[in-house]
Image 1: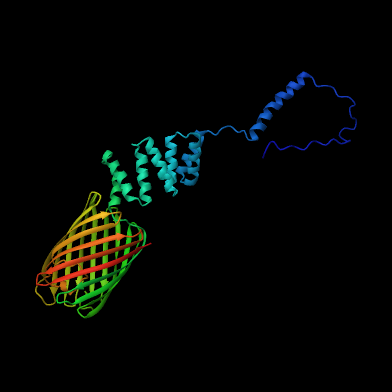
Image 2: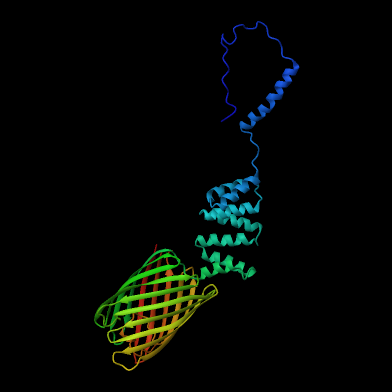
Length: 410
């Protein structure tokens, strides 16, 4: 309520003053001074209430801003810190929190500009540098974020926050949500025959600890058209460990395995080093094949990937006294650019197959393989992948495998 609102004047009726005084005496000096002593403080109160309030206290405002920030009331905390900065524009810490809260509330362009200004004043400020790296990463500027973090690592080589962010940048981007892809694959077989097929898959990652994928394949090979369907699931019981299982069925198939069952694990040994191990059982019409082996991936520097894999296979035919052994090894060298784009070359020796599983893997399969693959994302949700492999078969002749995959994320 405004104290300056005028109060209604008292009415004087005949009943209240039946005998008006014909003459009025002048007030004495003492009464004037007493009235002034009462009125002057009241006038001060009225003037304050009329709009001349005392200046806000920045210490009190800062305390309010900190409390709002601790309560996760981010928009209100941002407004409070901005009010503090208006009163104390030279306060580095308060301007830092304005920029930080702008980033947390989605004002990434404003936060970027604010952190750049702060670093112009204090180029070595750790908090501002790592906060700017986060903003650049959230804006999709991964190369700029990586450059800031690499500079921080030179001065803080063992800092866990820096190493964690760099490790995340080296790994392929993982997004919660859905993913669908359509892949065409083909083969040029010895003697001029061709094989063709397509796979449609749908995958989801409901959380960082769970993922699943289902897929259906149709293949035409050796004058037969066959189909298989199934899926896989991955569970991450710990931050560094993921376990996976898969099952695919092809009822009545003669070229494809009628049942394919697998289990695997991946473990982050240390920053940039990932160890894999997997096992698969392939149930063909003529025989059963067991496959197992380890693999290792090394992310070297910002752009390079080196991977190696060994695979042991044992084939057992119905009525045979023992299994037929087979060995294979492969090596991959890749170049990473951007968060998920990759160019790689690979080679293999032995029974390693780079196409869909088929009855050619039964028994002893020998080949020398070289190939090239390229994965590129046109946008954050749309990517392409192409692969080509040439195999020189030990029994004479050669085989060419190729594929094209379109990937959509949302």
